[in-house]
Length: 390
Image (tube, rainbow, N blue to C red; front, side, top):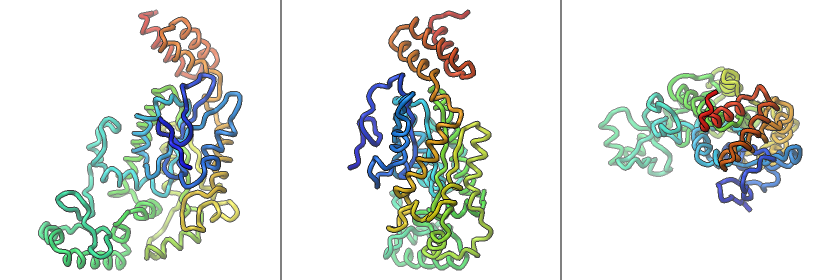
């Protein structure tokens, strides 16, 4: 049974935040939500059960099927922040998150300025699909697949009015795509492989440059919001099965009708490196699970390969939980320290009007972790509210 609580996360209701607990919010798509598996075998639930004392960690599953980084940013702003997480873990799926950030925003044209400052800088591309006056996609009349929009206005008008013209245009475009091995045409319907393979080709032009820039802008804005809330952000890279399973990769190319040799030189780790380099520049802790998956025995068993599904299997969930829980235990995060509890207590007391109690708690947090600026900032805000300028 899939249970969604009253605040929009998978699992039971969370209740009022307790300063004695540590809340870890996992953001992601269907790989994180794992709605196709029982809750107790998802990596989020497994990690939560491994952090049960000193302090108790509450693992919150904020994954939503089909979400990209832009939507996860929106989710955190409107639904994640009220949960008062101490650590936010963004689970980035290499296979389609770049693509989802573009498709969900119509190549950057549907961005909310509340979420992304100066969204106009991403308005670089037109939708390549043929659409009617009502913005509905006009597909091939027999298959329903998306049709490439012609470059001439008269051709656009003709294909909108004539099913025969649309059928001929669709079939000609598909043939041209196979001749030229143009993934933009071969994968026009959902563009899943267009973006995934394009990044393996190390492409940084056109749509790929916008997908890269938009994704990194979302990460930067998420980091800013999380830091503003006195929490920490970490990024986890979940590999596509195509990156770690050679057999599955060749099967996918065969279904797509593409020849590997015709794709040119491929770097299957290039999209990972874009994120790793960004996280290093931004000083965001990150964990890339690609090497662990690639080195696993029977790598196909880490995914639901037996039923033709690329999501994580129960064994894959355990692999993620093992590596990620170890990382959260050993990396220098503040969320496990006593300073966070004192900080959260101080914030609660300040919100309740107990300025003296809040000051004591925040001073304790500062003493416990002198290098953690969050508690000092909160103490400064408390003093400023009391007009204690000195």
